[in-house]
Length: 216
Image (cartoon, rainbow, N blue to C red; front, side, top):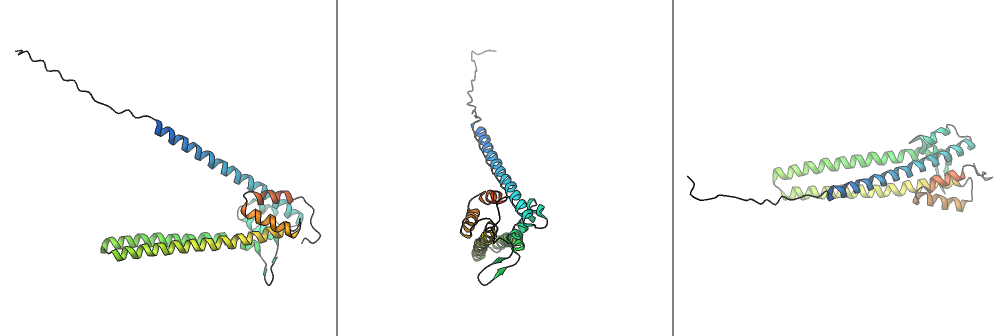
C-alpha cells in the first residue's frame, strides 16, 4: 500500500583527489641526486686515471720497479711513497713513506670501526639496562658514555687528518721537487692537499718534464 511517502536519499561524498605533485617532486630530487652522484664519480675517475698515468710515467723514468702499481687501488698509495723515496726532516728521516701512506688509512678505518662498534653496543646495552632498572642515573650514564665516545672519535679523526695531510704534503713535495724548485714544490704539494684534482693534474703535467740535477 502506498501512503504517498517518497523516500529518496541523495548522499554527496567529497572524495579527496590526490595530485601527483609529491611523486613528481620526489622523482626530480632523485634525478638531481643521481646526476650529482654520477658527476662526482666521473670526476673521481678522471682524477684517478690522470694521477695514475702521471705516477706510472714518472716511475718508469725513475727506473722504479713495478710501475704498474700506479693503477692498482691501495698499491698506488705505496707506489706514490716509493716515488718520493726517504723523506729527510731536520732530525729524523721517514725511510718508508710508501708503507705509511698505505697503512695509515687502514689503521684509521680499523680504529674508527672498533670505536663505532663499541659505541653502538654500549648504547644499546645501556638503554636496555635503563629500561629494566627504571633508573634515570643509568640513562644519564649511557648518554654520557655516548658523548665521550663521540668526542674521542672526533678527536681521533682530527688528529689522523692532520697527520695524514702532513705526510701527503711531504710525499708530494719530494716528488714535485724532482721537477721544479723547492718553494714551488711546497706550493704544489699544499695545493694538492686542499684543491680537488690538483694532485692528479699536477702529477700528470710533471710526468714528462726534465728532472732537476739534484733529483734523486
